[in-house]
Image (cartoon, rainbow, N blue to C red; front, side, top):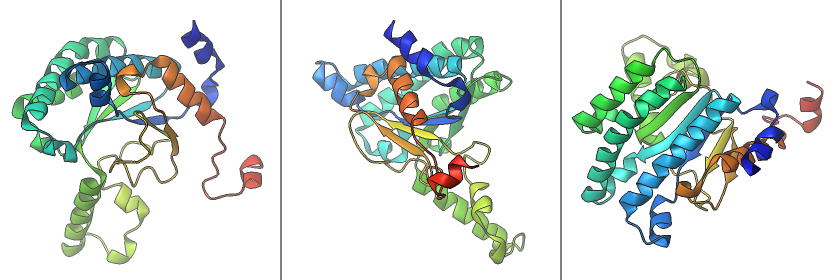
Length: 251
């Protein structure tokens, strides 16, 4: 009932086109509930499913979730291996629902570092869902913003060295077009769960004018009503993009 009432308050004409999420708190939720970290990650998958379904139902076009950062490779090998195994099983289990719900999967990040079986399953799901026209679910997997920007700088420098571009013509648009998100609009809303107040090397270029929303809710506890609450908070804000409030109102 509460979910429905929250959902009915949302202005569907002023939705964030792109919502990005830092899914934080799996381990702390597990510790609080006397469970293993792996069980925390498993419960986190349930939250992803619920949020994907809710976002698709109300008409959000892009949802990007921080699935695994490049820094996460430094976690204990046992946990990393367990996460990679979990990803494979989740993709195999969830692909039919992605098809049923018209969800298209994309991935950003250094996926060459992934185990072959994990990468193959991701690519197979991307291929199977590529014609879906509903929500675009973007997994930031083996991703970090500094890695992404560094790779873009290398590519631009190589093109300049090869005489393909002039240094004086390098601008924000060119840099954006060399990022892994080149075909994805910048996020309108970033949600971070778990009570932390930082960006954690996530979409640093793309978040320049994104509205930030922080919640103490651990990710495994995050459900539809929490998503609706974040969107309602977003809809109360005035996005000025460097302009004055009066300019925005008179636009």
